[in-house]
Length: 495
Image 1 (cartoon, rainbow, N blue to C red):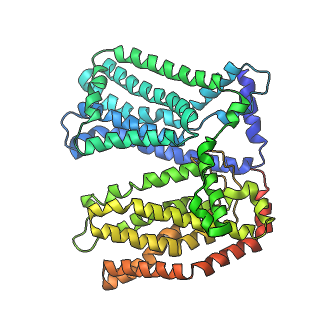
Image 2: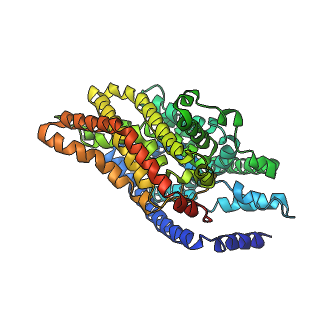
Image 3: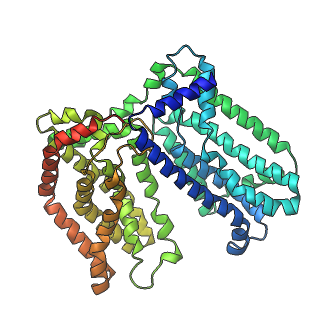
């Protein structure tokens, strides 16, 4: 049975109309993955030297044991966004006369074949051989490494259960980020150190094999928790209930004041909330709100006169990340229903204006939420204000103009990580002019008259873009209308 299921998976991929493109992308992602895994292995090889020579810690083993909890919290985050669920494949097998339990075992087993499951081995395997083995011996080093790997694998099965159990609401995402922020915040402000609290747990693995049995039991329990949930909910009607409609159907009432464009913005908002990929982009906005913490409080980025010019890049990202990420697939989000807008009176024009309205509103919200960065200085607030004005006055038009070049169809229900549907050459290259545009205005004035003159120039340029906003947005809408049949034909292609 397993061989037949593998054969069906291979045939499904080979017979796809996009097999050649998927194969090319797969090869590209494979080499990128090998490249990144090589960096992780290199990190593992120099980890003990980094701890001793760079961080100045005398006991590298104790330090690593106190930091393992944060590594697993980070693993929880990247697995939550990257790790794929086997639900779509499950739906294609349930109507067949096959054992449901065997199908689920097969799909869960296939999900385990992932480079994510060797990251802990690549990072901590060399550390165990080079640092722990010479001090404690080979057997304790093996026990310690096995404890780390088993914990990582337990997270794999836990995430498969957690995402399917909570991802249809915002509870899952909020729970993950709240856990991470509370633990990091408590450590940063000195309230308590969770890593040091759990350090004896991993130190115990150097003295006794008992943690292996406990973690192996945890691994088995997490697998069967995942299996039991999938087995209990493995019905087509269950898998089709993707949304908590009480939340997904909520309207943003104030948008109705903007007429038909407001109604289209409301529909776009519902699309964002209901679908995995768009919802992930929305959640990433919240993540990138913390991006400034890497730069603004870092002595390496402080300047004696004015401010570090990299802050312009940071401010552009914080106040405009949604339009940069979501906007690069401007019309691809609507590819399944694009013909509907084509045949509506003023449908395409209202769709484009509705997206403008939504991009501006979310960018404004990001700017408001970034105001607490004034804690790091008034210049940071001025940077965010200037980049915000530039984003909604200039960048927003650049995003939409570049995104209209040969848009491609996409499946809204698929995840966002390593999913390149809707992506073309223009989408990959779009970030270059979008990041370069603020500097093209800022740098000449900054070098001639000072950094704050550069910010003023960006603000004036953005304000001018707002003055001609209606004319440019109308021009963009007319461009979509002129190319509507070509775009519609492209969207009818099978993925």
